[in-house]
Image (cartoon, rainbow, N blue to C red; front, side, top):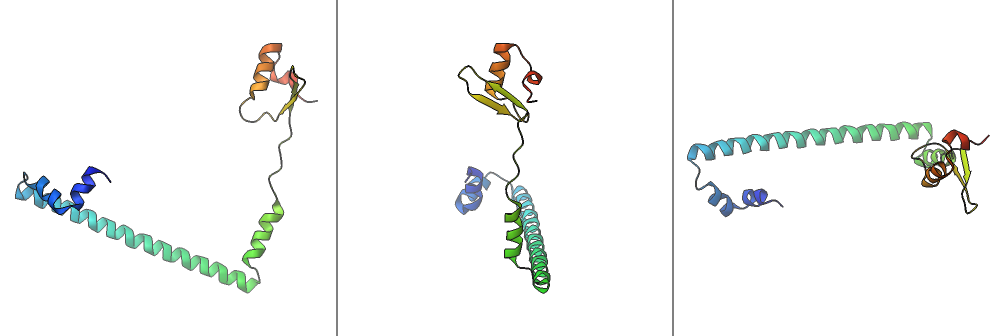
Amino acid sequence: MSEFVKVLTRKNSLRKQCSDLSVSDVEKVLTDLSEILQERHEEEVRAQQEEKQRMKKIADILKRMGDAGIGLEDLKAIKAAEGPKRKVEAKYRIKDAAGTIHEWSGRGRTPVAFNEYFDKHGVTKEDTRIK
């Protein structure tokens, strides 16, 4: 908790901080805090209304699913049937000095093994394309 919040939430600390302020300054602070409080109340009411509408939409969807004979398990089964994303095929292949074969799809950053190979052999990416 910040020092400012500690002062605001402790009456004696707040009193001490306000001791040098004039009555009009304290009234100004009080007015500002009242406005902030009102804004926070409005935000909270708005958030509760949005959540209520969201829950109503969810209930409506669940009712329509039930009417159609569809359950949550059916939706989960569809997602499971899709399976994982397919792997992108390699477009480039090199064999390093140790005889290890490295493959790269050409997406993302160039692997270190490829950069070292390019520098050492003076070739380009296109020279290592799988035919």
